[in-house]
Image (tube, rainbow, N blue to C red; front, side):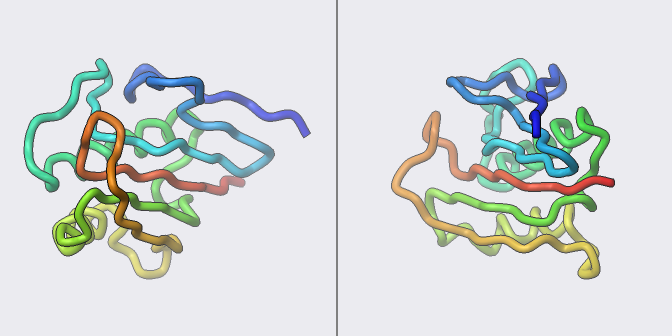
Length: 128
């Protein structure tokens, strides 16, 4: 089955040899998003601001495929400090606020993230 590379100027361009997302059949795999704006500039601010930007980026990449956050079936969250879990979870919950459509997920503390950001999130979505 052929796959389609997804690229939108509404989210930051990849900063390495990867795609913003790949569609394979009805499934879209969105690469980890960090808090860069669409122009590639790091968003200033605390983990709350960074998490909002990451979720805005995920939303923009999904929109380029015709999908929405309600189509997400799995998220992976990588955090620099698990002590920020409650804050990240609160922001995340404001984007995925319907228990009936809340995706599966895991949250993992890591030693370091690209550009020394506080949070990175990737997701898998399935469309019709």
